[in-house]
Length: 347
Image (cartoon, rainbow, N blue to C red):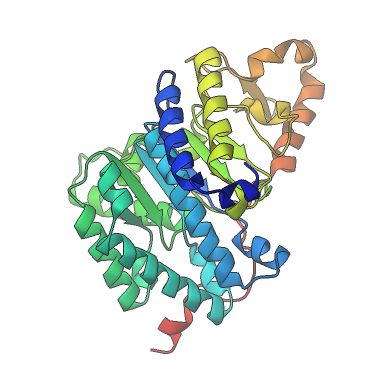
């Protein structure tokens, strides 16, 4: 939708009505239960439009509210948003302090008003190493969790501050402690699932990242490896990403799930997504990765399998290069030394 349309009288009401109508339509087909979002591009949007960084982050929050409204209208049970990475503590103290002030302001607004939470029965859960937060921010976050704890319609997981490596590390520590106390304790993949921050959430169906960046930035790394999870990359910066863009993602996921058994194989940043649709497993004898199909239904690979018949040796190089080209390494936008926030160093 063009930006100028938002200046017309009644646009907000029209948009709200459109979200409700779309939500009813999308629920007639497969609907994702759990959507994760890497809301990337606030800083670049601010620099591009020559506005202050804090204004870019503020616009990003407004975009998040609009997207969440659409998701809940569409029947999504759980949304997980990457609000603040532990790596973000490496940014300038000015930006970090302003982000903390923004968090206090917005969470206080939610706890005092909470129209969205009340309307959709949203339970807010804070995931991450909250001990790294300033005490005043931590207090407000816990108050928000307490106020919404009895809501049962949907869940909003706010990762703040969070990295997936930190989550997995915490999970391993808890599993070790449990196994020490219980000799009959069995450790397997299901055990790891039960000890993750998202243990009470449905399996991840869609992982969305905006800004045209092709990496996962240490977000839900364990949760997104399932063959039923669709990873979607979008060119638009997060403040530019609106409900209409989310509609296209949901429709595409629903279409692929209905026809092919999963929502994989979609990217608005790279129309040629063939290389990203393989299901791969290691071949120990050859020392390479080989494609497999999803037993639950047709996969993206099956639609292209004829191109690779009787060409195993050549394909081995292709599959390996696919992994190297995608190279979803965990890296921060800026790099300095330690992760510990400035407010803790001064104590």
